[in-house]
Length: 269
Ligand code: DGL
Image (cartoon, rainbow, N blue to C red; front, side, top):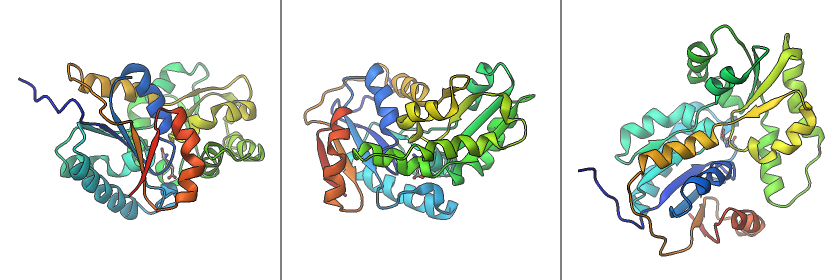
């Protein structure tokens, strides 16, 4: 018989910042009763500007500590940057099931009519061999144009802190794709960073109505639901966020946004 976890064992969602909340929103739709711990490595944000070695070390170290302390039933690395670099490593060292987040190139290739797909991610994500492999496997015969848009990470963080964001940031992200040869035929853009769906409306304004966006959040939520099918869930305490960095002013600024995603307690790591 399959091992049944403690009904109060949480699903642990992990990201460098608030990006994983875009995955949590989808998870709530399919598993509203699942207790969740949301861990954000705000002290390490942005991952996208770091080296592969640094990201791998941070992610493995943190997830090791968190899984010992909180005994999650499943960990979701709700971050494309961390997943494309460290997913295999984390799976090697932890016993708990790990769900990763990878750029939604496969569904984008099925969706495009023009055959030209844009991909927005962090600098670290777009240079990963993992992305090359997805392109070769799923986007054969299509054109995939990549652009690193690190500014969008800061924009999503600022938006969730309740701060205004200059629309020029979104125009620059769109321009980064549009200036590439063949870009006038882009009809589908992969949001290959979990922060980006949080600013999808702003991106839609910048790209215009001919472009559709796709991200992996709903698929990840379905995968978590499949891996926990048949398990019992209870939520003895309200869901909480764990933040690295000990910045209480930042935690206060983010509290209303976390509240909207059903997270009413914020703890410092
Ligand atoms: N949310 C992360 C991702 O999906 C990246 C943000 C960062 O640069 O830390 O790639």
